[in-house]
Amino acid sequence: MNGKRTAGSWLNRLFGMAVSLYPPDFRKRFGPEMRDAFDDLRDDTAGRPRADRTAAALRAVLGCAVGGIRERFAPERRVLVHVNYGRAGSNGGPPKVLSNWIADVRYAARRLRTRPGYTLVAVLTLALGVGGTAAIYGIARGLLFDALPYADEREVGVFWKKTDWTEEEFLHMRGRAPGFREIALYRSRDAIMRDGDAPARLLPGVSGSAELFDVLGAARVLGRGFRAGDDAEGAEPVAVLSYGLWRELGGGSSIIGSRLTLDGRPHNVIGVMPRGFWFPDPSVRIWTPESLSPETRNWNSTLIGRVAPGQVVRAMEAPVAAVVAMLDERFDYPAQWDKTKGAHIMPIRDDIVGGMSTALYVTLGAMALILLIACANVAALMLGQIDARSTELAVRLALGAHRKRLVQQMIVEAVLIACAAGALGAAIAGADSAGCRMHCRLVPGLNRPRRTGPCSLPRWQSHLLPH
Amino acid sequence: VSSHSSNPLLAPVVQYLLLALADGPSWGYAIMKQIELESAGAVRPDIGALYRIIARLSEQGWVEGCAAPASADEVHPGRARRYYRLTRSGRAALRTELARLRAVVELGARHDLVPRPSQP
Image (cartoon, rainbow over all chains, first blue to last red; front, top):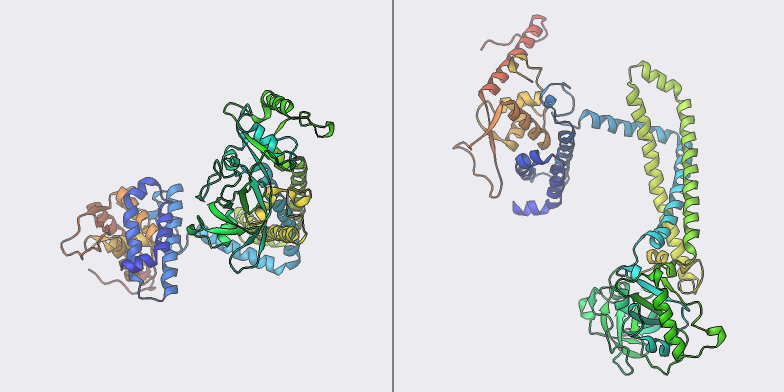
């Protein structure tokens, strides 16, 4: 019997949810008994075919849920009184209100089926508006509204002269930059991965200084991030994997400590980042420590920092001036590469979104307007339908139909159109995403956000590409 | 449903529920099954409706919880089986309701619509 209970556990959970619809006092008094009665029902129907059993249980769940709603909103004593003799309600079947709605849904569906032209135009008009708005909102939400996958992103800022710093400059400032808790250096470093006999793969990657993950404040799902010494010359090569890459490599915890061959050198896998983490863009699959040397003069790195407690990224004039003074004291810059000019720290979100936020807001507003126009068009179509139905409505009124019921029926019809348009709109939005994904993958260069282009919106890609 | 002397017509499910308790205490699922059986499947309360009615009848003072009768089956381990019985006022209300139904049937018999009910 317990086995049957386990088999029906999802139904029991569903029934428990239905019981939770009752007011607390009622639940406290009758809840355990109701659950036991449900168990009795399941035991009683155990000998029947599976479909019958499930149907009986679902009927009980539905009845219980309807009863809960009625008990919560209309716990009147009328339940005892013979209001609807021989009709649905407390003597079985769905309540009258519910059966009215069911009848209206059926009637509306039948009516829409008999007017395919009207239905198709209304649904398509709304679906295009919904789909377009949903697709644009999907992009805008990630870039403008969702939190970035870093701890307290307002404390993280990107140094001016992006991709224009050297290791020598970083090492000069390391641990000494006033107003910053820590600063880190990173640069793009794609790697060719060989995993056993599998074909070699080019992995978009980033190499950074040991402070990189501390600055970002990101927890790992497995293992650790970089730590002091990982970026020293001659240190053992290590790598941190993205969640997506980890899953592709089997997704086991034994990955920590295993070796991956990157660019012909074995790297020790030390950590896996959580699902949804990306830096500096969602295409990056692997992070490795950069072997830092003061002699290296490559001008291709970016500096990122987390401000000290009490500091705000948008008000870092004094600390930045101190950093500029440090640089000025140590380095002689030619006029066209002078890092002491135009110094500022940009909040990481502004750095990622760049100048796109206004364009996104405008596009979102435009799509919302298009949706509004679509709604107005469909409303006009519906008004036309009501005009054409005036005879039908007059006859129904003359036959005794209640005005409220007629309105309810039209609302149901509108809701059906809205549901169909919503579903189709979601499919259109999904197709937009799939199209963008394919476009980003097929066109070389577009899937690297650090380059310019429409697909350079990192958070947009975070919805499209595996992390 | 203020008093049994001025009862509005009770819902069939309530009539059958009171009848199910007329012979002695019973418990939730057994009451449901008895209602279904005695109404020949015409009245089939679901669990939610049953307990809503039991709640109202308890407030009305027509049924009350009671101890399991000595002849009760052994309860499945881990299940709570609470028994209910008719109170005095519940039994009186049921009698009033049945008398009214009898009066209706007799009226029908006078019109030769149904056979005259046999006297008790």
